[in-house]
Length: 221
Image (cartoon, rainbow, N blue to C red; front, side, top):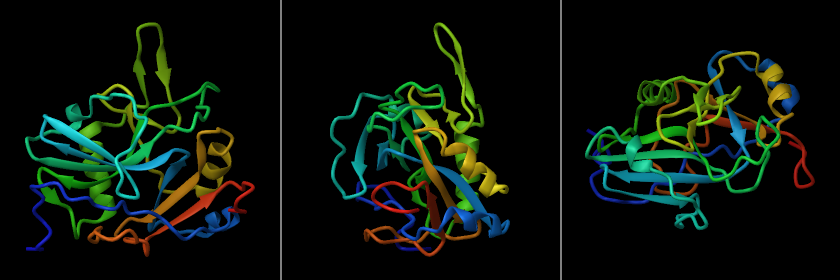
């Protein structure tokens, strides 16, 4: 048993983030060992949920995230033990798929701890399967006045919490489509069979992730 496997007390875990960027033109050459998720333009965040009683939302620098709206995060947890989720907190006033501001939402893209177990050694594909089992695959929800359908978001059972969908092919076409929306920066691609490594240092789990972003004034891709 890995000495880090049990997670019963709060200890900050740095999120597994892609540091290597590739030119979007190279996406068409990637094989089926990769899984793509949209890259959202928000603040990378780690959500620590202790049972159904309390939560902490931190940024990727081990600081509690400021200026966040209340969200019922504890309703995401399916046990009385710790759950730790990685995601994007949307706080940059970006426009969503309907052309309107899409702010103060949390988008889950990975799970690190489930039912008090730190998922070290578990592949990304298996963790993604677990997320789908926990939160489903619905691309929409019914509000008081309307039915809202998303192209590149999965709605969870908790208001203002979403999950990133996964794509297994056609990465180049997908990239060209999603960058038309202000909220989406590009794609993150992760190796399906890559096993989670401990995240107690800021730079971790970088060998199995790459990103392709739309050009800005700060970078070409």
